[in-house]
Length: 201
Image (cartoon, helix red, strand yellow):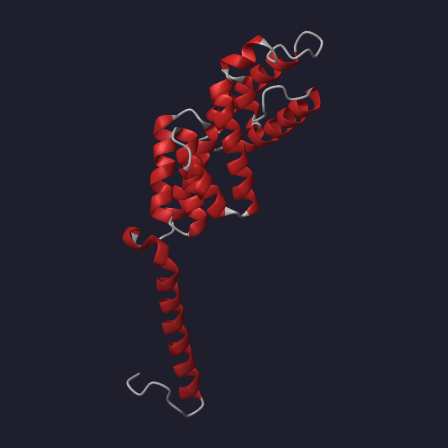
């Protein structure tokens, strides 16, 4: 386990940065937020992982035991991890084109790559492709709480669509239904006033 990756921080982070990241994750994954939720067990597992990572970086009177020898063990993963952190910031800021370009420049297409690419595609309105990438992310790392939560959220959205082959155009179907309903109401109002908007009705 790389404690830096678990907490989402760069190797050599200060104790204040470690504590801040820890508090943020504890709030995000606290099991009390997932009562009567199928992801409750994953949230509990994630909490254990977060606590272990925090403990490993703060034990021995706050000295950072991973700053020297263990940092080299994570050098390759930390580079891609910092790239992914930058991409997450870009997505949160709404810079989807830049985020997509950075993702396309990464050769290692791991679970996090697919998850973030799915997030970019979703924000571009490409629901089916986003669903495919998020499914790949969960298949590659089935115990990752964030990926499973994202995929479940997408699947719930897909259940609200009437036709799975036209998910991205479902709003058009709703607009047509609303249009017909408005015409029918307008015709009824006209007939009540002695007129007739639609002659056949």
